[in-house]
Image (cartoon, rainbow, N blue to C red; front, top):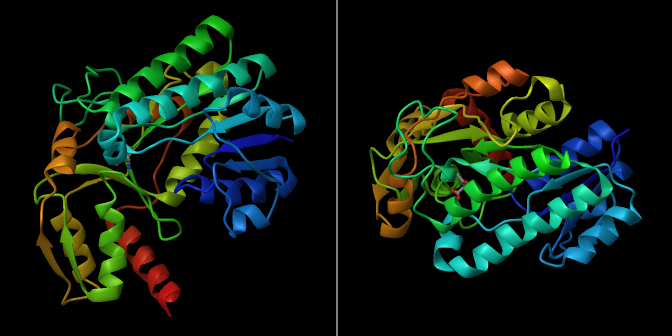
Length: 315
Ligand code: AKB
């Protein structure tokens, strides 16, 4: 049975990934860590430790204490927050990553960390962005993500650490809201649809970005970590996506269930510029071929599920 350490476990991905992995691998085999502790399911349902990923020794101490064989390194600042405080983003995103990789090297663990569509930049091909292409991002987050992909490749090639990763699009979930991302609008729009039948988008119309529903994102992580290592040519990191949408496309889908839903715009220049530097749609063929990636949810089925779940939550 695996013994897994998760950093950033109370974040948007972590809070759901920990619960799913505890179902699969057993509660005591998934050690959740985060810089803060809250009174939530992740903390209550299994081992939890406070961990600041910039403290290298502490990561090693916790990994050794629990005898882990897998590290899922999720702790990071998202794109909009990183753009507001680039040096802090460098220190947390890169410092945390190299610290976690060093522990993986020392303890010979498997290693996962997410990259992002943010690893692409303004001169990357915008449509059906290939797996292997130009990556010259114009944001600190993107610089961190490209560097992270290369660093993970390096630890695999140089030290034999079994590093794996995906380039996530915007992730949509009704459980834990994201914080400080450029794609967060695509989550907020559903919350506001239920609450107020209206949403004001900080991302402009006709700005297309890739998105994926959280259950597909969790499935992708688990599938990639379980995949036969010899079949993986692109370890760090695989393009994965389920849909390419703009605010209007989501609004139209919401209106099928909430006919009076109103969408207006108050564009935030910072997040709009980030969005415009990212692809419209990415190509996930390599992930499909090398480890069988498949997204179950499209915009229509995701919208039904999001609205139903949020309605129940608000009652
Ligand atoms: C963000 O918007 O920063 C993230 C991402 C696409 O990496 N959701």
